[in-house]
Image (tube, rainbow, N blue to C red; front, top):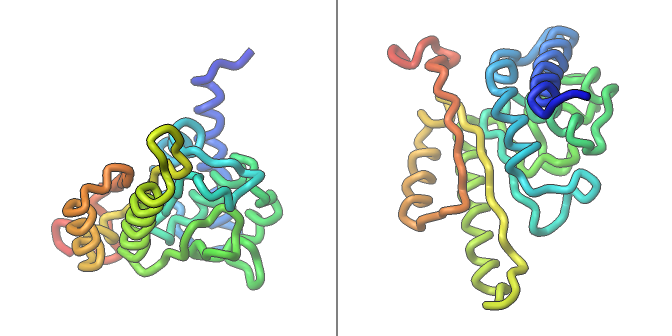
Amino acid sequence: MPTDKSLDQLAVDTIRALSMDAVQKANSGHPGAPLGLAPLGWTIFSRLRKHDPNKPEWFDRDRFVLSCGHASMLQYSMLHLSGYDLSLDDLKNFRQWGSRTPGHPEYGHTPGVETTTGPLGQGFANAVGMAMAEVHLAKRFNREDHSVIDHFTWVIASDGDIMEGVAAEAASLAGHLRLGKLVVFWDDNKITIDGRTDIS
């Protein structure tokens, strides 16, 4: 019988393979981030995130934002493996006209995608807004003996996201408001579209 560790490794390897194959077939996309972030993505989706693939609009679900939307195959692979309504054929049609798996995640287009991302830093700022909404709704609807609203917002952000002014402003606001249920993972791989981060 397989162990949790071997199942986790199989899931991570599958995310990597699905991502590489889809990008290769489309002859377009970004395979690097899904390759590097597969272990983190799988941990968030399988161990940390409170969500129900059968009810992607469940009100008190944890939110997940892939701020580095160019790494969309990471998110699509995780959604597929987690049981969301995203088929293997959908993954095979990555970046094709009319597909459910566009080059960047689009809210309302792909089940399980919380917000449209693409412009660097935008997803990070949207996630801060989601965390602010959680605090507001919790204060409004929760009672001492009963919590209706209690969820986290999980974010993966790239070097390019962090370099954008909108991300700096949103991070400043998040710190000022002490948004303790906003969890941001920074993919500090020291690479941007312009080259290494020490020269860009």
